[in-house]
Length: 301
Length: 192
Image 1 (cartoon, chains in turn yellow, green):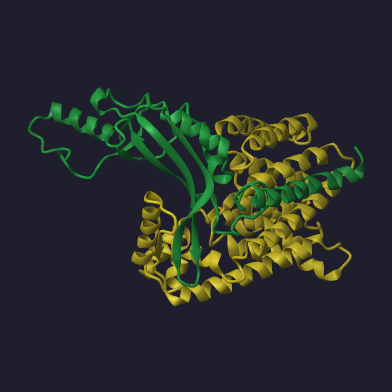
Image 2: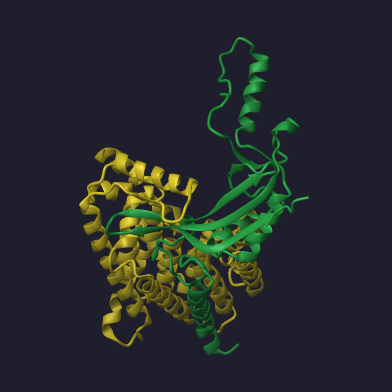
């Protein structure tokens, strides 16, 4: 991409930028995105944050080192070491990041790094969604909608949805959180309170619960089914739909970024439209950090 | 390394960890949200719905209210987080034993000290005066960041019980209920 091509017009500049990105070997771009993932969401403590930022920064700007197996081993070992120490309390995307950093080590040491990245990404995505669905059945709170009903009534991150679609009031939701805090302050067995709720919340929770089971189940099946079946070509569309419909409501950006990265890594090079969509998704995911829910809730109020 | 290993080793590791997580969630009170089984957003039993309740009596056998905190020395931040993710009887007992050896102060002690400092430099100011005979104070462990405390305001405990609780939700009635988890620890100073 030359300066002249960018200056020839913004539209042409964007086209050239995308062409440049998509011409890169798929696994190299996936490795670069992995470095970004590690720098942005790889750590929650300075112990890991400092070495990750230094090492990932070096690999990002120094192309010959991008496939250095030694450096990837150091990165993966740091991630495994720190996350293993906190294994029972870290967030879920940290597990996926840990596994993916191990895949990066295997890929850069392989004679076919592209296949290693793509196959692992596809299976890891499928398994991640499979276990997510298994847990939703084991816990038993999706078939009756109770998990999302409770979440809608107490979680400030989805206040706008509980108000706009569920029909509850902001005051009621604020009081729900205060009531729960009071229970925590004076616990005794069987002590209970009734939350403020509108009938619409139960219906909304049921709709969202069954949608979640459907889309997560479909993603799991699509990614774990061998590629020779024609219908699995829908897998990218399913994953993108899941990310777009989930993380713009519940902004867990680290997980969204990790899923989009694995999706990109396994997306076949000839599927240019899908690959461009994944790249756009990386940008869009950052927009979820804007507190939309606050603005919408204030507007509804 | 073999090609098959490169393609399957990490997914196999994920499966083993996830199956172990399901086992621990059913045998050791591991929260479905944690431990690598991808059970996030599947259950209301997330670590945020679990908490430690306290029952304490001071050296004069008066019941006092304790605010649970983990100042340096009792537990690392990581172990404190772990307690609500996968509560452990031994760890809870360790915390209770350590807390019993520490002095406690009213939670408002730092604020009172700051108000006193401002008042001493501004005698005409109308700053709030701590109310006498109001609600009984809530106590917490004295930390090395607290101001110098009048020894008369320090309290030591004779008995402390730490109890794990969790909140449960009933979708039919929309009620949230506090439930006792079968994990608790009591520590007591033997009477002289």
